[in-house]
Length: 80
Image (cartoon, rainbow, N blue to C red; front, side, top):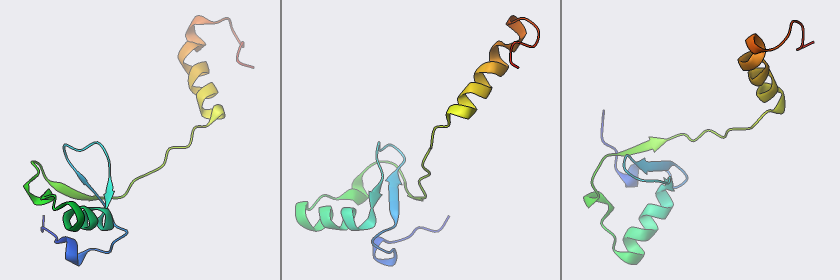
């Protein structure tokens, strides 16, 4: 995979370190490098461009999953 430079990425692009626990925007990393002189390039592990997905819980899906998981243990037609 081709390595990218921060200067080639838009500020809103999200990146993450394989050993990190949070995502950063390119603007946040640039700001930390300038403001605190933090050498992020020396951090162990690779950095990746990420596209975070948001999970939205669904009560309907939870109920369907529960019914499927206990169906065998219940009496006939109980899920109707």
